Length: 117
Image (cartoon, rainbow, N blue to C red; front, side, top):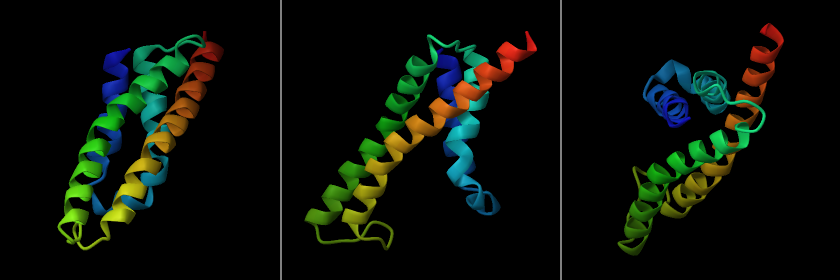
């Protein structure tokens, strides 16, 4: 299960530096959940656990971004040219968004695997 969740998150974060793929970034947690759920073989009892593990892994880099943004806010500096408050809001939104999109991707992966069997 951990292997599938790690692959799911790696897919989401590995795609971010590629400029042309930024048009597809909103669907990457879904794609990561679909592929990672297939690797983890998450069945209907494990799909929520899989997506919660994925959200927990996503929390780690997001918490680092939040801490850095708070430090920059206290120093009255920007975070890469962006207001630190906006960066904190984006990081806080990204965690539940990743959880939900991953959950839907893993669910569709489960349905596709169950129909093929």
